[in-house]
Amino acid sequence: MGWAQQPFFIDHVQNGRTEPEVAAMPAMLRRRAGFIGKMALEVAYRCLAGRTDVPVVFCSRHGECQRSVALLTDLVRDEPLSPTTFSLSVHNAAAGLLSIGRHDQANHCALSGGDSGVEYGVIEACSLLADGASEVLIVVYDGILPEVFLQYQDNSEQPFAWAWLISSAENHNDVFSLSWGADTTDADGLSNLQTVEQKARQPAGLDVLRFQLNCHSQQAKHNELIRIVDHRRWHWRHHG
Image 1 (tube, rainbow, N blue to C red):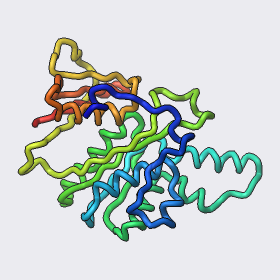
Image 2: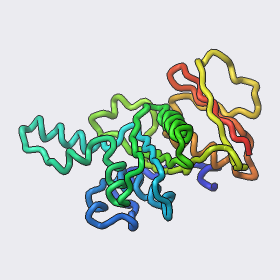
Image 3: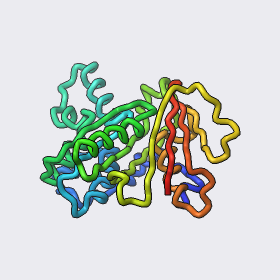
Image 4: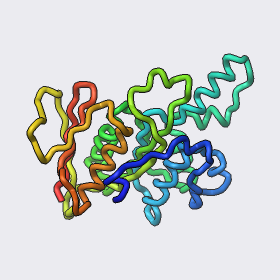
């Protein structure tokens, strides 16, 4: 809750090798996961403790981009490529490791929706709920772009991972909703709305997380969040 009130970032945490232990995962698989993957797996394992057959939606804009760049660099140098590195560079690498580590054959998918990744992940999770799942885990995570791509960076970058266990609104007091449409209206003057432009000071996933955490705070000032991304208006509402 304190972070939600006053967000702070840790610069280049990878270099200090401060990374999650993912103690619940078998050691052989844990050693294969990279820094970003371990962050995603740590929050997933914590939320899934004691649960089985729960669909999981992984959402990451860049995924294991560092591994992909390393492979492409080796290719340019005409060096042999590592099959292991390749298998862990795909966008659903963390999903695969989680499924293997937990011996879980539930539906796992991995999405990349640009700056709207959280919203697309929630839509996917709601689709799974509508298809009969009693609850769905959504894991949102990302890291820092490799140096070669920094010139294309259009948002702030910070390593992070969080997870929500989502179920239908029936018989629950803590409910949120998400709607969307073209950005054709002006939100100025709506005191209960918090508006975040696409080029925010923090990654989009943290904007949404901060909003949800603040809604549970006694000092909450907003119960709605508008995110404007590529002329699309995402409208989050917290219903208590």
